[in-house]
Image (cartoon, rainbow, N blue to C red):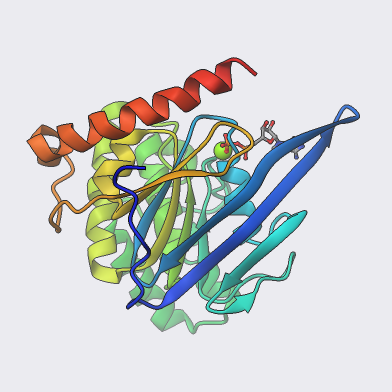
Length: 272
Ligand SMILES: Nc1ncnc2c1ncn2[C@@H]1O[C@H](COP(=O)(O)OP(=O)(O)O)[C@@H](O)[C@H]1O
Ligand SMILES: [Mg+2]
């Protein structure tokens, strides 16, 4: 298997997934969504989980987030087995769908986690203002989600999660519903934020360009049932310019190498 590389043993393992399996019962039939998926993510790594729609990406992410229970295998975060239903410390989740509270303003949405945690009003104000500024949302603090564009709503979603300072960030196609240019803007925003925080990220996507722009490693999943097909290192220099990167020969070279392999899985996905 070309370009498959061993995990970097010198780095601390944050997420360890071994032999993970999940099946669902749908109309009396067993659908195996994930079968024997295994991989590790190390401290500060930005890993993209790439595969065609329906291959089990969200199912894997939701098992790491303890939202659903695996049928087999093990997930450890910082060496501790995760327990379904029990939130894991230091983990933040950004969903694909817009989960903002429509009755709360931008600042109300971003500050929500701090309110829950009982952070005093003064400190909350400072942190929310900083988050609004970092997300490029100055002047929009008092706006409600309904009067924001899709890109701005996703900026709010991102900051609502990041304000709690998670060390591990799970992201499920957070920019999937955005148009191409807004998506590129969001890649720049996320790259800037990640340069500051260097969180450990597991980012689900079916978009190869997005995975190449953001990640240090791309884990390519097979068509359903999802298991790891290949593991690619993306060693483009950082900090990255989300727009300029796409015009480099290194980007084009790695894109075409992974594209073929991903295309095979898209084709299999269509034929089941
Ligand atoms: N709650 C569920 N009940 C039944 N089938 C499900 C459920 N969740 C996911 N699946 C099935 O599992 C497979 C993988 O789904 P998912 O993880 O959402 O894929 P992806 O995120 O890669 O698009 C799909 O065939 C999907 O229909
Ligand atoms: Mg999904």
